[in-house]
Image (cartoon, rainbow over all chains, first blue to last red; front, side):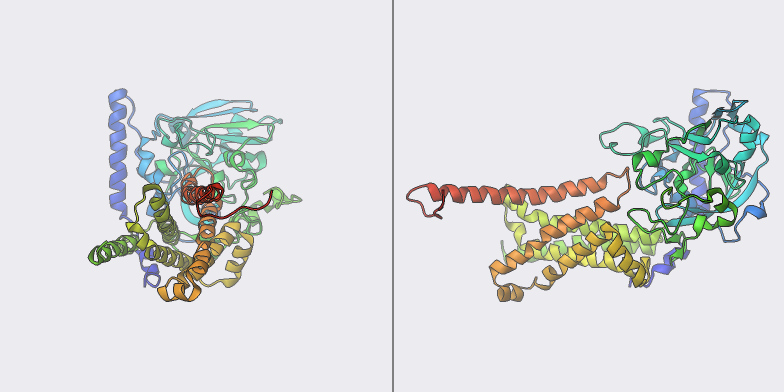
Length: 318
Length: 216
C-alpha cells in the first residue's frame, strides 16, 4: 500500500518555496539585526535568497530540468553543520556570509585577498546548469551562478612551480556548530575542510567559482558566500564557504582523503566502473526521480575532461 | 499477572510497535519524506528494525539485572515486530530502491559486505519467525527450540555490522547501536558464565547435588 503510493509524494513534496524563502529571509534578517547591533553602520549584508541575475551560458549548460530549489536547499551534505541531510538547512543561520574575504596566495606573482563584493564586481557572472553527483549515489541538476576559477587564477598569475590548487573552507566553530569540540566529535573530518585540484583541472573552463544558484544569492547551506563547483567530480570535491585558495607545488591534503583514504581519493572523478569500496557507483538516483539512472563517466562531461586523464589508471588514481 | 493485564500489555506493544509505521505513513501523506524519499523510508525502517530488535533482546537482560519477569511474555511479539520491520526495510530495497533489478541486487549482496550481513540478518530471522508459534515449540522440543533461537544473537551482530559498515565517517549513531548490541549480549554472557561457575562450585561441594568433574 505504502509502496504503491510512493510516486505521489515525489511530485508534491516539501514546503512551498514561498514559505521557505520567508523563513530564510527571517533568518537573514535576524542575522542582520545581530550584526547591526554589534557593528552599527556596517553595510547591509546581501541577504540569502536575494535575486542575483546572470545570463545563462548555454554552451556549459545541461538541457535537463533543474532539481526543485526546495530539494537543493534542504537535502545537503555540509558536515560543518552536522552529518544529517537536514542539518545544514536547519542550522545554517549561524553562518555569516558578509563580511567575507577570500585569500588567494601561494605560488603566484600577485597574491591578493579579495573582499567578496569586490570579487562579484571584478568577474562577470554567468549561469550554468550542471549535474551534481554525490559520492552517495544521488544527484541533482543545479543552475549555478558564478565565474570560471581560471579567470581568478589568471588574475593572480600562478608561477611555473604551481602544480596544484588547495581550497580551504572557513574554520569558525561559532559559525559552524559541528566544528566545536565535543564528546562525540571523535573520528570525524579534520577542520578546516580542505580540498584540492591539479592546476590543469582548476584551469578547466568547467570549474566554476560559485556565488549563487537558481537566480539567487547562494544560500548558506549550499556553501555561501563562495564555493567551487567541479561537475565531473563527486560532490565533496566542490568545497564550500571558501576563505583561501592556494597555489602549491605538491598534491595538497584533502579532508575526506585524510579521513578515509581507501574510500575517497584525491581525484574522485565520477566513474561508474570504479566502486566505492562499500557501494556501487554504477547507478544513481536523481533527486525527484523514482528510478535509478545509470551513472555516466565523468558525470557526463567525458567529452570535455577525459583528455585531462589520458594514460592514467583511473582505478588506481580514484 | 492477570489475563486482563497481559492483554493490555500486549495491546500496548502493538500500538507502540506500529507507531513508527503510522508516523511514516503520515509523513508520506503530508509529503514530508525529504528530497530523497526512498532513502528516507529505507533508513527509517532500518532504524526501527534495529530499535525493535534491541528491545526484544533487552527483555531477558532486564530480568537478569532486575529480577523483573513481567516483560518475558512479550519477547515473541516484539521479536515478530522486528521481523516485520526488517521485511519492510528489505522490500523497500527491492521494490523502491532497485525496482527488481535482480542483477544489481545480486551483485550488491555478493560484493558489498554491509549488504551481505544485512541479508544474513534477515535470513537468520526467517526460521525464528517460522518457529515462533506454540505448536512449533512443542514440535521442536523446548531444548532444541531454545538452541535454534540463539540464532538471534548472530542476527544482532550482523545488524550491528550492517550499520557500522554502511555509515560514513563522521556519523556516531552506528557505534551507539553496536554498543547496545554488545550490552544486551554481554549481560547474557556474563549471566551464563556466572551460572556455569556456580554449577562448578556446587560440583566440588560435598553433600550438594551437582555434576562431578573428572580428569586431572
